[in-house]
Image (cartoon, rainbow, N blue to C red; front, side):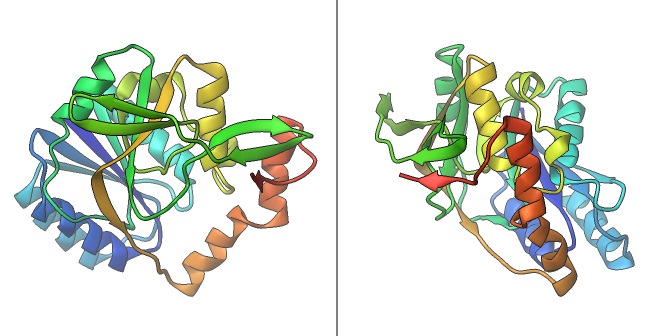
Length: 247
């Protein structure tokens, strides 16, 4: 059983399309867990009723703007309570494009206790090794190929946040709520690398469509992630004096 955790915030049009894509290409033996930190609407109520009639789904209306880290952690804890062993981390802008067979990925995860996360292709080249040097994050191009049966993978410290993992990995390494309203991506994978035994990998054997868009209100809230104030929160936490550099 896989828990597909999907967070959404002020992007209802994208959210509707993404969830429909999951219905269209439902992978089987899975449940869709949705955390919505946006506005309530009658249209959304009707849509969620429709989704529940098509696939196993649970929908949670969280406090407005609670933050992506807190929203994801909420769903991870739901999955843990339900004894769901695996989690597919997704978002309201990542659309399924084909039927997926996750069983080979699960077999790879279970082949070694250190195998923690398998990131997938979303046309977003955000796969690097991570180091802190001269008090800033360094994103380092890497090429560490691994082959498991017929699956080609590459080991990286940082992969896109569309990935399959064991639920326990996200219990051991939750997203830090301190970064609810700033860039949580690099901090999550840095903590995974430095505080746990788990390794991250990437494969293009599973691909999805990453879309963009949002209202002016969404973009205003989203801009906090790249603002000086948002970056300062991350820098202060890790004792950094500058932002990232890509080598």
